[in-house]
View (cartoon, rainbow, N blue to C red):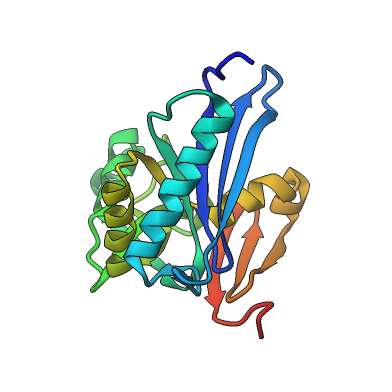
Length: 236
């Protein structure tokens, strides 16, 4: 059995299970699953949030060792999917007055995005930003570059995670000696897997019932408009 090459490893931390999966991207964009493992998380994760660091470290270590065994290969780094109660979304508007009504430049749009990214939220970390629409004077636009206006409002949806949980998560992987490639939002990965482009465009609500939490996401015109996590799930 040859060792696997060019694979990606993702670990998702749920309230009942921590799951590890390794896969390879095929030429048609689909994923060939090479290995999956899971560990019981009841003693380390509550409401999708790490509460016992030692036990979480043990789970992560076991998952990585088991995947290495199945893949017959080392693992350089992993992608980690987070969800659960530490996540919510907040809207934010960045406004720019444009003198001489010159057309909007790409540089201006990037500056507005950067200004939004540097927003400070007490005890929260910005995990992801979903650009809503720009309002150029009175008109809503998804692509404002090149449009002449005297005022541009950028509407952003900031997805936040509790800083304490963010740090705990990083600590767990550090102690386990596993390098993080990226922390991604598990609800977004789920939405991309189950929703069609038509559903995202025309508008829909995705409800994901987990063991301890239920995640609700609203899509409209291809954009995430709202994400909320309710602390009730299958266990209730």
